[in-house]
Length: 119
Image (cartoon, rainbow, N blue to C red):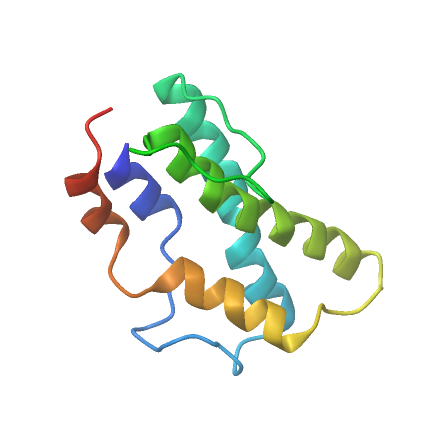
């Protein structure tokens, strides 16, 4: 599952570090929004239930459902931004996009997560 998530969310940024200010808004927002669909599929495949994370503390030790839920929250926000952008409401604040890009692209990689989870 981890390898599939990595393949499906490859940002194709050419090794550049976030924020990707040289890319068009729809590309930047689309990269973030893509994570939501991929995480929904991963959760279904592993029979993990996505939970709201805002204002919540994950149990210790956290499991894959908690990890996926945290990542999903960022992707889901990307979906909202894309809907607003496509309606003509303009892009979200630059710092919000930059924070989401940084969260989703580093440091480390999706493959690094394998070592932390048993489920």
